[in-house]
Image (cartoon, rainbow, N blue to C red; front, side):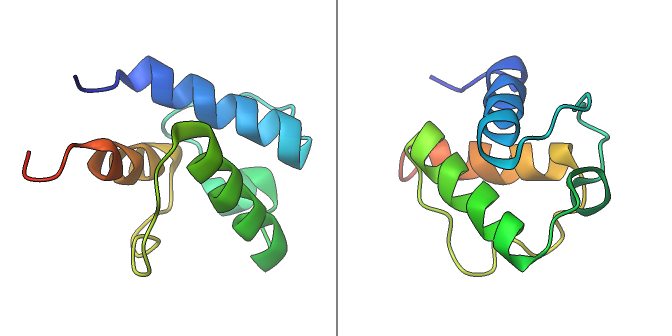
Length: 85
């Protein structure tokens, strides 16, 4: 069963608040690096905690082209799909 956009967005908001102390609004059009002040350590923290939260494994190369929260949601959705779907 596909996960909803709202579930993905809520999960990203929760991880950002808990692990990055990000308190600003997060919407699909939010630019990740700028809005969350992501340096390499904060980016790694975000990725690891999203993997834990959504029980997925992101792969090398998944970060290519991710600029907004919507881009991140698309990658998470793709990783959450059952194999062969």
